[in-house]
Structure formats: C-alpha cells, structure tokens
Image (cartoon, rainbow, N blue to C red; front, side, top):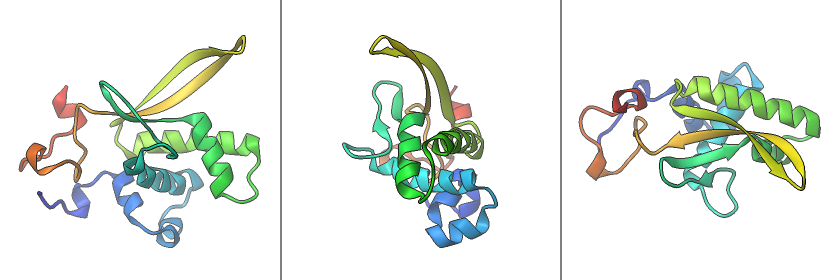
Length: 149
C-alpha cells in the first residue's frame, strides 16, 4: 500500500484521525468537530451504523435525519430542533472539508401521506480518496474525484 503523508489527506480525513480531545481543541466550530467524528464512522457502514452502504455508483451515504439522531445520542443536552440544525451544518462542513468529493442530494420523499425533504450526503464509488483503497487499486499517483470525471 502506498503511504500518504498527512498533507496528502483531505482536511476531513485529517480531522478524523484525531482523538476526541484533540479534535475539540483544533476545531473552532462544533460542525467541524462533528464532521471529523462522523467521517470516522464511514468505514464502519453496517447494520447499526450511522452511514448506510450504498449500491451502484454510491459507496456509502448519510441521511440528515440519521445524523440528527446520532448527534442527540452523542451530545448531551441537545434538543431535537438544535440537533437538526447541527446536522445540516455538519453536512455542509463535511462537503466543504472533503473539497466537494462528498455529494449532497436533496429530494422529496412521501411517507404516510406526508411529503418530506430528505438531505443525503453521498460518497461515490468512482474515485478513491487519498489514503484509501486496496493494493490492487492504488497506484503512485492518487486518483481524486475530479480526475475521474
């Protein structure tokens, strides 16, 4: 596997490598701190995970409603309304800190006769992020989402 220096990683990946205490001290915004914590969870996509496994073009995805619930569980004293606002801000921070390699999708969904706006953050399969992948698909020049297009 090719070794990447920390400088080669996206800001989001660098934040995720810090433990919680250091992460809180190097970020000056709660959404940036949460973005690092949420990114750590991406590799653990499974049945009881924050991230869901995608299919086709999408490797994994995260719904704003799931993130809001996760924030309420992890952060003490956070109301439902504030967790929803933090979830939106955290998704915006993740999009920015990933240098737009994470996509944001907004769409309408109907359930029980009601219409809901769903916001989803997606990690596409069509491009490796720096420092990720297997021996077979990593070469000496890392592929980025922009260079795959």
